[in-house]
Image (cartoon, rainbow, N blue to C red; front, side, top):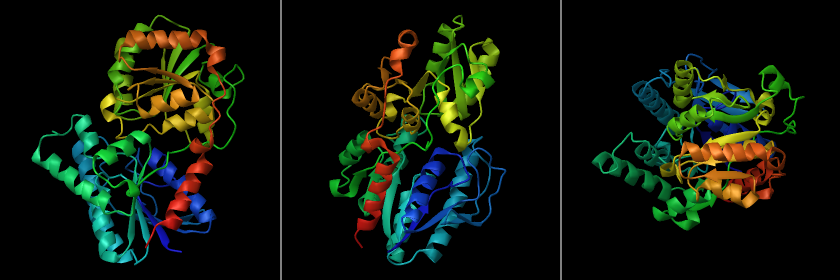
Length: 400
């Protein structure tokens, strides 16, 4: 059996979504008898000042961490330098360590990683699989960070498409992403849809007075609208703030924001400036407490700007479904999350991007609180076991 080499900037013990998803899959594959290796950076997603050991073996998975600069996420320039230095050192490591017949799986952090890995894989006789958590540069274009009509943008799209067409397989994490890849003329035979999955492996706690975090965080008497995870460019923070303003006098409702990101920093500042009393912030929670922090909510707010559909999928959706909480999705009515909510009858989509409509939806879900805790048991398609199995089958069957 070939070695499986995953490439991503972050890995355990990092708590970023890409790191946790990769760790979950790598440890499963190692338990199944595959020879799994990780090449990542020495950084942590939310604290660039920390340096992790160069080499580690975590639950059987061999981890090699390479040097990069450590400016962190505070500025775009610093982030770009971190990306560039990681690219350069990673390229040298892969050129020296990849073997003929290896399967190298490239995720999408940093952006355009598939291009560099595709070139080196061809040189070394390795097989490339792209695990597409997002699509760059389209994400940058949708976020307004680059001009879609520029020569550079078109060139980046062209070389990225080349790397996808020359890979053995490209794993999309949703149907909308699959449709977008098809429109970009990536052969159907080289696209697989394998959804992300929940990282929670323990039963959820009912949302009630006895919930330990509701007591600890002072939420026992509240209807809790929660947002959990990274809040950034893909999400409409202004719309969330406008909704908070409209509900400022409703003491029965509390907004609970758990996580980080530029949007979280923006909302923290506005909440202080405007003295909004019904908003609470909490840091990222460790994995062993994730079932508690997710189940503390009565409803989870998940949002995605419509122009981002097909480019990313909010992976927090699967954790929310795993703890049997309903979802309020603010985004495209035909988006990936909206399709899941309709398929499993586990929430409501608001697509008109108006805070008044969102308030009506929240009040409606609050009035039907008992009914909204429906049984959202995940079927085989959305379970961790199903996605893990699909990944194993793909890796074992990838042709030489």
